[in-house]
Image (cartoon, rainbow, N blue to C red):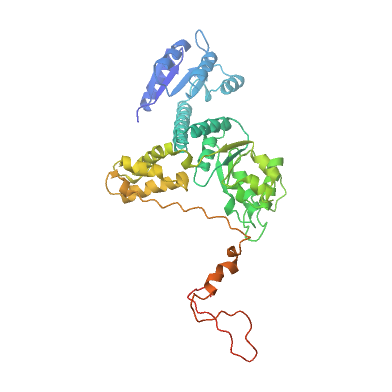
Length: 443
């Protein structure tokens, strides 16, 4: 790793030379200047990892230089030093953005310790920024269809606010992707993103899952446990498939959204959390409300901002783009040479209806990367299931739609059969009526 550059700003030549020797012995690259204007000029000309800045300087003092550094180079840590400092001066510089304040005469051990800690924090901050950038790239809402462009624009606007968001769309369209994209673009991106699968919430433990419980609250509660709301404090809580949530759970959720506080199961302490709620569903909540399966008041609490993710069949122009993207991803992950689609293969993908949407396309491309040995994927390599035709609605007035009507053809003897169909009770004392012989297993 290249040596880290430390800019030392002090008007005392002896201190500059002493610090130069110490920093070089520790493996750093010191740059020495004697006034604030020279320090700002150096910062414009070269990359600097840390600034060691004296308060008393000729011309503009160190505090004025500190303010300008914080405006122009906010990611560069600044350590202040002074031989005439006070507690008030140290507090003021720290409030202005200085990392730390050390007094002269300088202690060698303390100075090096402060510098190491400041540089380590800067490295961690840069690594964290890079991880956030990579995470944002992984949850990018990919596509060039006008509907997807509009969705990206709306998601960015929603991310800047704090309102609750309801994301709608079919299975596999990428609703969770939209939720994560909103979180990573929001001021809460450094805080947790906690997911709740509403369809998998156990009915008897739902309050424990969401709000946590105290030790001994119920059989098996051997220790205190934090719920999803506590885990997401300061961040985002994502309710996936909110339409599958039971009415009892909906009532508990509504109480928290209205009051902003809750109690753990078995506890009495009121807990306050700062959580942004994003919900997603593949069902029409308006229809569920009409049938009494979803609370209308909860719906309006959740749908402050509503975003819809279109199905893949409505944006066929993005199929090739997504397929190529998935192909690069899975080839890289498998350590294989890059593969490519032949034009006929892309045409075959574009013709499919994709009832499973983007998830189905992704699985299809992963399967092709595994199963196609060559570097070219042709149309013959693509085998897609035929989309089942929609089932006709049942006509309840038609006797053929009833159970009796469906069984009637198998109960009736074939034309010309000598087997009589039992139509009533056998005559008294006579032989029982014969039953038809049939291979129908339902008989």
